[in-house]
Image (cartoon, rainbow, N blue to C red; front, side, top):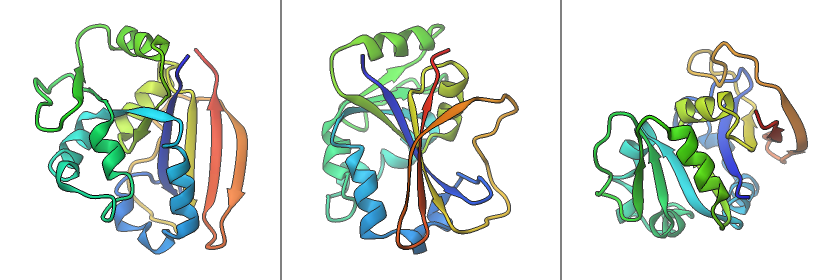
Amino acid sequence: MRKIIAYLFSSLDGVVEAPELWNMPYNSSETGAALLRLFEDADAALLGRNTYQEWSPFFPHASNEQVPTADWMNSSPKYVVSSTLTSVEEWKNSSLVTGDDITGQLRALKQQPGGSINVGGSITLVQWLMRNGLLDELYLQINPVIVGTGRTLADGEPIPLTLASSHTFANGVIEAHYSLQAR
């Protein structure tokens, strides 16, 4: 069975929103290599509407020199979860996941042969996946910075996690890898 795996950047105070505003000083070859390792076993991406709308104008014209995952993102299937979009044609290999049974569609996708399915960004989608027992693993790169305001993964419902591994990088970033119980 395929796994759905999310990777997010977090501040010490749990903010995961707009990491481009606060995590750049902590990007390094080490943290970048850790992120790229998740793409080795993945063969698809799962995106929420906001992330799709932010990334679809950029990635089709990007190169691996600009973003090391650009070729992977452009060539891999992308499943876009949205209740409002009617088309995702502007970025090749994109399919819309919508309707009354999104949970069933994603469970069926996980049953198909293939590698893991990566979720980048998409805070609302990650929260929804956790609440619905569809997220298998969560990687957080916790940056040594306090942001003070912004969205966190917390949405009012406790979600138990099990620490699978952790690693501290030379620049003080902690990578925490969690597994989630199927619900």
